[in-house]
Every structure is written in C-alpha cells, then in structure tokens.
Amino acid sequence: GITTLLPATNPTSVIAGTGSGPILEGSVRAFCAADKPLVTAAPTYGTPENMAKRLGVPVRSVLVDKAALQLDLDAMAAASKGAGLVYICNPNNPTGLARSAADVERFVRRVKADSPSTTILIDEAYIDYAQDPAVRTAKPLALELPGVVIARTFSKAHGMAGLRLGYAIGQEATVQAIPRVWQLGSLNTITAAAGIASLRDTQHIAAEVAENARVRAFTMKAFRDMGYQPLESQTNCIFVDLRTSAAAFREACLAQRIQVGRDFPPYEKTYSRISLGTMEEMRQAVEVFRR
Image 1 (cartoon, helix red, strand yellow):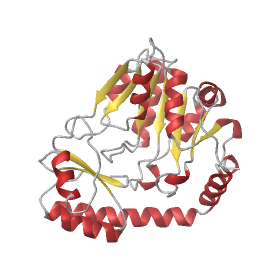
Image 2: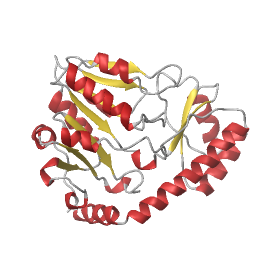
Image 3: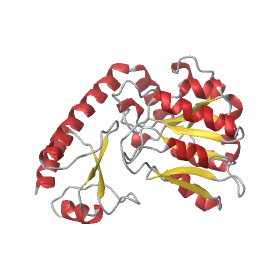
C-alpha cells in the first residue's frame, strides 16, 4: 500500500521497517564486515556507528568541517575507498545543516567511481523540513545507481514517532539485501493505515513544515537577540554554541522544567542541540533559556 503512493517506484525497490532505525542497523549488517568499514560523520546520528561497534566492524569517523560544521563530503569520499558502507544524514542531526542535491550527487558519483563496491546510505529523516530549494531528495540517484539507498521515517514531519514506521528506496538488489540479514520488524495494521493516510494528506505535511519553520525562526531569533549564533537549520532542531557545556545548560534548564537534548560529541563542551516543540512550548522554553 505504501509503495503505491511513492511515485515512480517499484514495490521491490522499497523496504519498510518499524521506523528507519532497523533499516540503518540492517544496512550496517548487510554491507559491512571486519574488512569493510563503516564511514560516518561526527557529530551525526549514532545508530549506524553503534551497530558497527556491536558487530566489531571498524569505523572511520570523519569530523564535520571545522569552519562551517557542514558534512565534509570530500573527506568522507576519501575515507570511503574500500569501505562497506558510507552513512550520511542529510540534513544532518544534530547540526541541522544540509548539503545541496548537487553536492550529494557529486559525492555519490565520486564514491561509486572510486570504490564501486561501497554502498552509500543517505538518511533523509529531516528532508521534509528543508526550506533551501537546493536541498532535495537523492531518490533519483538511489534508483539509478546500484549500491545507493535513501532512508525515510514517519517520525518527524509525519508526527508518527510512536507508531514506528520507516522505509528505504534503492535498486531491488541493494535494498532487498537488508531484510535478508536483519529483521526490520513487523508493521501493525494501524501503523500501516496511518502511514498510507499520511502520505495521501500532503496538505497536512505542508502545514507541519510551515509551522516548524515559524517556530524555528522564532527560536533562532531569540538566541540571536541573546547574542548567540545558531546554525542555519533545515530540520526541527537547532544547534547553537552556548559557550558552556551541553550538560551544564541541560541541568540548568531541567531545574526550571525544560528538557533539552543529550550530548553530541565532539561538540558537547560548547554546543547544545535544541529540539523544537510547539510555539507555546518554545515561548516557555525561550524564557528559561534567557534566564
């Protein structure tokens, strides 16, 4: 049912899971080995790296660009030779920054040319929130090239985190290698029905994205007014240099009944990731942040 709502996609080019988490885990299991490392970024979403460590797979972790904190695609491409899997989260969690579709395409074609056996996993969990027109899905690349996968989740803009639904798209031989080696979970019928309804309700997603942008602009302006410079987020969180540790900020906020996120090494000594709630929640949060 879900695959029929994804335009120009054969059902065999789509796999579904209980969230995108098992798809990320299964990709490491399917494409990495003791002699086929995982390449990932730092900081980024940690599931692939955590899975690699559980499996005893070597990890090549590439720091984001020091000047802009963007994913360093040149360095990641150089690290990808001989790797089993390259993981890029675009837009990236926790920084909120995104690389353009042109940058991603150059990266993918370079990796596939230099290391044809390396699989590339592009996690697009946050792409619905991206308002930069240069940021677009890599789905066409995943369908054109073997060994390229995009992962999506219903946990963000679709608002279905608790129902657990995600999917991946790529050439049949690529995506079907994942469920052969890893259990992606059993979707329940309520989740499946909700996912189909949500894909059909494009106006709802547009409204969610617009509201997220409104709340994001409000929160970023509040930090700028306080003398801080949050990164230009394309997601539903902002990453800001608070000139104090994330732990100290978190504890001070929690004492005033506002909860902010975990540490994101290696930037946890100065940067904090702040997830966006409703406008009402962020008005309360900003008052605590000011204090």
